Image (cartoon, rainbow, N blue to C red; front, side, top):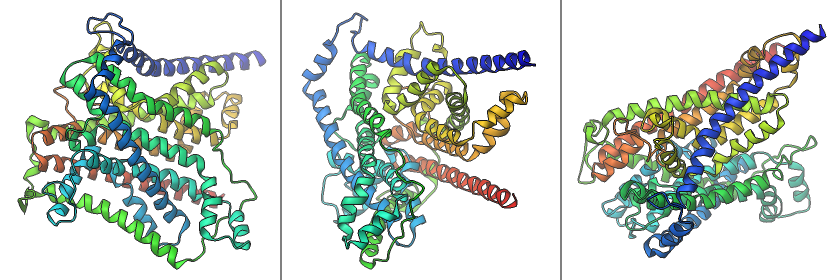
Length: 560
C-alpha cells in the first residue's frame, strides 16, 4: 500500500516537473532569448562586428537624437505629475466622500483604456487642433502639435492607471485612526497629510513610476500629435521602419528600458513593505457629511468626466460627419474603409488577434500560475519562473517588438516561419501583458486551500482532475478578468505590434495610424469607434458574467 502511494506521488511529481519545465521553456524562449538578441545588436555594427559602445556614442553625439531623451523625460514628468495628482483626487472623491453618481464616474474614468493612444491624440485634434471645436470657438489659443499636445494626450493615457491604483488603496482604511483624529479635533487637511497620505505612500511611489514609464515609452500619441517634437518612441520607429538602421534602433530600445527597469526595481523594493495594513481589529471607515467637501469633489469629478465624454463625443462627430470640420452632415461612408489602409479586414484581424490572445493567454497564464503556486517541490525552478513572470512589467511594447524582430526574423531561428503571422502578434501581446494577469491568477490561487490537492492525492484522484474540477471553477471570476484584460489590451495595442504585423495581416490599431497619415481622419475615427464599442461590450459581458457567478455563489452559501 505504502509503495503504491509512493509510486503515485512519484507520478504526480513527474507530471508537475514536465509541465513546469514546458512553461519555463516557452517563457524563456519568448522573453530571455529575444532580449539577449536586442542587447547584443546594440553593440554590433551593420556588418555584425562587435563595436562596443560606438553606437551609443554616435547616438548621443547626434544633436537631434540626443535631444529626444530630454524631450521624453520632460513630457513624462509633466504628464506623470498631473496624472498622479488628478488620479488621487478622483479616487479620493469616489472612496472617501459622499458624492452621488460614483458608479458613473468610475466607469467614465476608464474610457481611455478602451481606445488606442493614437485616438486620444486624434480626439485632441478634433477638440484643440487648428480647426478644432474649441479652437474655432476661441477657447484654446495655444499650439496643440508638439510638446503640449503630447503631454495632454499622455495625461489622458495615464490618468486611468493612476486612478485605479489609488482607488484600490483608498477603498480600505482603518476607521479607528480617523475616529481618534476626530476626537482630538484634527482638521480634515491635517488628517489627509498625517493619516491618508502615509497610508498610501507606497501607492504614490508606484503610481508615479508606472505613469512615468507609460508616458516615456508610448508611441501612439507622439506619432499622431508630436509634429517635429522628437521623443525616443518615435526615434526607434524612424530608425527601424524608416531607415532600417536596426543597430541604432537597438540602442534606442535599450534606452527605453531605463525607466521601466527603475520602476521594476522600485516596485520589487516596496511590494514587501506595501503589505496589508488592515488587521482583524480594524473598523470600517464611516464617511461623515461635509457639504463643502462633496461640492468640491463632485465638481472636480464632473469636470474630468465631461472632458472624457466630450472627447468621445468629438470622435463620434468626426466618424459620422461627411468631412469634419467643414461639412458636418451625417454619413456612414467613413465606415466603408479604404482597402489600401487595411480596410474592414484589419478590424476583423484585430478581433481574431484579441480573441486568440485572450484564449491562449488565459490558458497559459493560469496554468503557469498554478505551477508556481501549487506544484510541490522544484523550488529552484519555481523561483526562476516567478522572476520571469514579473520581468514583462519592465518591458515597453516597442522593446518587445524590436527584440522579436532580431530574434524571430533571424534565418538561423527555426521559429522564423511565424514572423509576420498572427502567431507572433498573439505571442507578443501575451508577453507584453503577462505580468498583471499572472499576479491576478497567482493571488486567486493563493487563497485556495492547499488541502484540495492533498485530499485529491490521498484519494488517488489525478492532479489534472483536481485542477479542472476544483481550481478552475473556484477561480472563474479571476479567469474571466484575465480574459477580459488581455482582449481589451490586444485590441488597443500599437507599440507591441507596430514592427511585427505582416503586409497581409494588418490590424485595426495600425490601420488607424496609416489612415491618419493618408489624411483619412474620418475613417481613422470610425475604426476607433468600432474598437471602443467592442471593448465596452466585452467589459459589459465580463461584469454580467461575474455578477451571475457571485449571485450563484451567495445563494449556495445561503443554502449551506
